[in-house]
Image 1 (tube, helix red, strand yellow):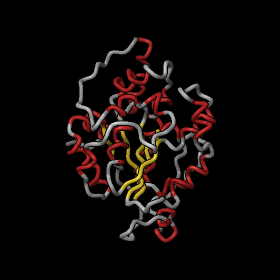
Image 2 (cartoon, rainbow, N blue to C red):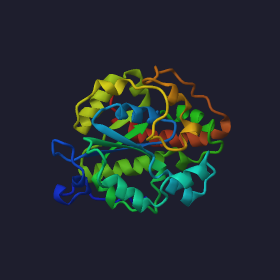
Image 3 (cartoon, rainbow, N blue to C red):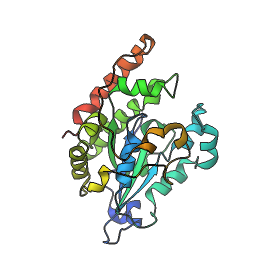
Image 4 (cartoon, rainbow, N blue to C red):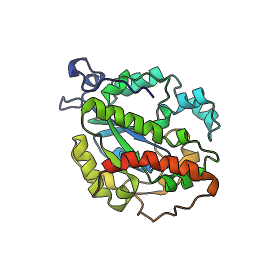
Length: 267
């Protein structure tokens, strides 16, 4: 995959400069690249609980479904409700943000970043990554996607994008492992905020239950657990057992996960 984009652009010419919060500093646009079933929606809830932050939910999903034709739950409604042109999505993600927030948190699925999508706009974002133990992820994914492929896990795309960001900026972008996050949310969030250059906000540890206007229209198919939650759920040790037919996929996922997890933030 050819992830080629510029980082550290001159702020005078960066799309980031088009949205200021009241103190006059640029809006920080955090692109959190996850795979499915990685507590990514809970982490979006966490950032959405900050008074200085607005969030968006998988903005490239409709384009991904349009291009791949995959039979995901509620695919027809996603295509009808959400923007399918990646250029329009990229312009929105890097353009002015209503309300002049300090932070624009963007929850992305890494596999939605198809090879056909341009990369130049990625230079306006601050990248971070969310991963989960592959076998636990696959057990959860199989419950909603009966025949996943390696590319459906987002791991190949996460590794490629991580390596591109590392090569461009010379330092590794932050990686959050979901197990560490659930075991000690405050400590890991403090470290994440520090790496992103923002102050930790205790509001990130709790939220009200229910849906959000910022959730994608696919929420009824995927978000039942997070809609009942009021914070990060306690970590539970998860079984590593999978049906034997999924062992090759699990091993491929573990090899990719092993390239990212050494960079994970810990309490």
